[in-house]
Amino acid sequence: MLNKRCCDRQNMGCCMPMNCGCQSQPIIEPCINKCVEREFCHQVPHVCPIHTHVINRHIYQHTYTPQYSTSEENQVINIDNGSCQGLANNRPFGQF
Image (cartoon, rainbow, N blue to C red; front, side):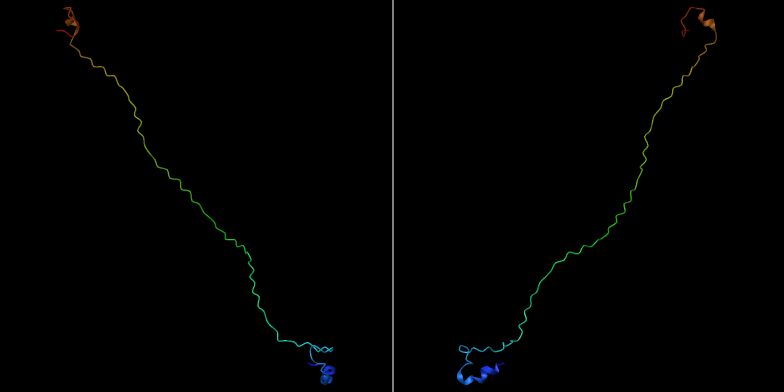
């Protein structure tokens, strides 16, 4: 886009870039697209419920220990030699 006033004086050389006191409209260049990739780290907390069920087994093992006891019995045995006549000879008891 050229300025019409500047172009009217083209014969005088005023449209030369160095000598021109007129300003032209800026030329809009095609858009240059820049791609900027950014990464954002987000921490997302998760709750993972874990339930532990404990089974306690009580095992009783029975043992047997003998407990000894003793008993005594006294028995009396009488040997009867018949009568007291055997003692009359003054012999000690049990002798004949």
